[in-house]
Image (cartoon, one colour):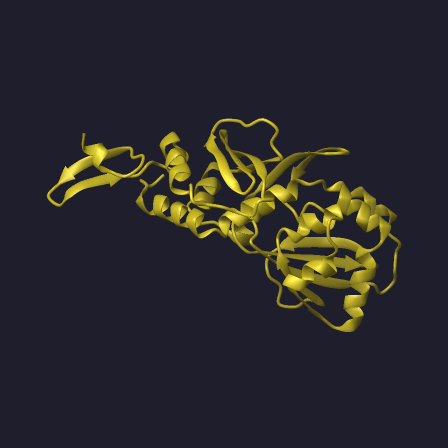
Length: 272
């Protein structure tokens, strides 16, 4: 009877001298998912925001479906036709969904599993899935074509994402998540720019209308030439379209209603 006085799904309620205290569900319990769906009913993203993401936290599996900008499923278990599987350790997953692990640290902790045209992919999430693509073997070796590009992606999965890419002799040789003190070119755009550019649906110059680019003319011209190499474009296309799903996840993480729900549940849930 007392639990009926509490709003939403709760694990238990108990009377005290001050009234009824409601204990919110623990992270990843069935009640936790029910409460998240209830309190995020007001979440509405752009109509072209869609994703089917399977999560795995050391065997704790749950799915998220966004269709037409609306969260239609967020529940324990497996989903059919997932765009990708996103894996974390159990402890990292709990920290991510309590918003204690975010941005670059969350991206470093994540592993993406998906199917590409040339076979399965298991590795870091985009944009760190590009380095090592075999298409880069066809890039010409260009002496003195060395530069470092630092990206800032707004509305990324689990918050703002910083990523850097290093070229040497015209070829990508290293990358990583995190901020750099020094870079030849700095670019700031939304995370959705990654799949839009890779798929060829939009050009980087068009997307920069809503972002910024900084650098001297020489490095900027060099970067433009490298990105337009046929081998680089082939590598972009070969990474597939799963980054669109990650972009939708990032848009959820930028939504005030979604974040308020996560923060409320994290503050009131029992410690893991």
